[in-house]
Image: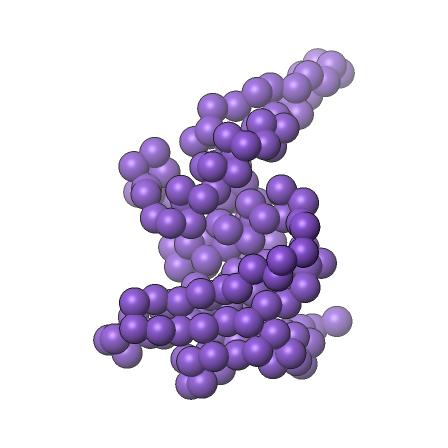
Length: 161
């Protein structure tokens, strides 16, 4: 695999891992292989909204958290396809609260509208953790496999408290 692609993939997977940590989920093993990367599932039942944020985290990081010029409706990466499926399976994730004139109402969104809102939320949560994503990505790039214990240690050692 091209070294630039290896670095990009490692940081993509690191962003998934950091988002798991941000959502209070168990760390999982990270792997790089010839065709891409993998952030293992823990096998523990998780909240749908946490899974959605974790799913979107890799591409959010990869894109620089910028939606300018990004056509979500036409984006068909594995992560986006999984995120769309989660939004279809859990329609409650497609509601947003709208406040107008002292009144509150719930608005049900189209899948891609909700996808964009959740993508922005993933970006907002990841941006303060740029350094830990970089460090974790570099470690994955070097070793190609990080156990869940190594992932947890790297995050713990690089998070500002």
